Image 1 (cartoon, one colour):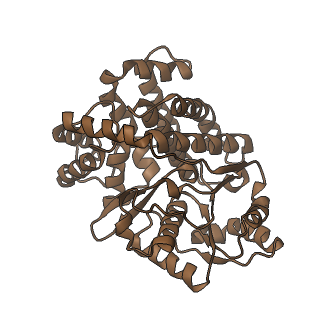
Image 2: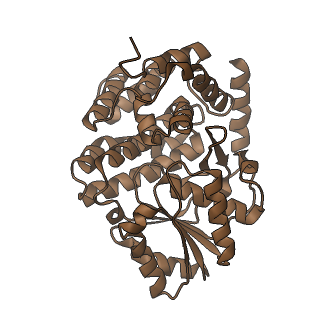
Image 3: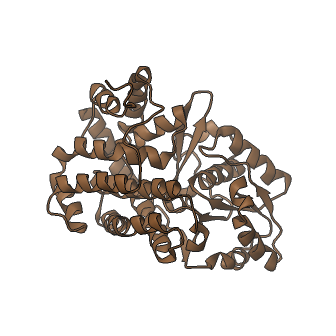
Length: 393
């Protein structure tokens, strides 16, 4: 494990040489009406709107296009994005961008449309195969003007340097990581998040909490990321149960949107850890929603990490009015229960566990600044605890 620590240490120093931009942040109830004005100010004439069919059918995309039409902005809509966007989806979006001679990208949706839009933008400026962007700093060319409008409070993708794409052939996911992927404008409108299914509110909210916690516990954390992470943790514990209980609570929805953004700002600078490394494999293999995978994994990974960073756990506990770090882990478990998140994966198969563990550790080691290193057997043991009850005995 000493080699991974050296690599992570070198990466930490290299990170300081590469500035990460912040998007221009626009937030508030009804602010989607400002989208056309904001794009006009960027000189945009014909954006590609990247979204999914559900958001089109719900009339949410129409709120955006109405603003574009008011400002006489022509646009093309690509609504083929599905959860865990694939290489083929990115290629299809790129073809629509080219066909309509677009000059900008507006992503509206959850993490999947925003991630897909990022890589469409990368392909526009690089004209390369999507797999060529896998890894760090493989784009290095400014994207077309890019606005991200999240409709869920969780991924924080509107603030991050990363996009995750699925390779169906390999049944796995890969990350594209480059500061040029940060959107030029992030528009947070809680009205777009009204009436989400409770399961989505729960999973995306726990995704944001995982971002904040892993950013805070990792060795890349600093004063800036700590400030963002701590504010996100406090807000999520306070507001997520309210947003879950009442999907029409605009204050709770707006608070969660901001918490998700802050957690995104934190983890895009401090990175994530084993929760994400394992969740990516479960998503690639079984299509388990990313936020749900994070939520189920989070308590077990926190228990594993606890011996190496007790003070940080105590600090997080104090943020939410608890006296010690072990109580913080219990609070995470209780929040999962409150949100009706399961504590096992029904899709998980015992025979797949060694390969899931191997892939997760390959993703994490040397890349993620985890507070405590995990061996293959430790990762397998952790996953075994998450087998469906019928298989775990």
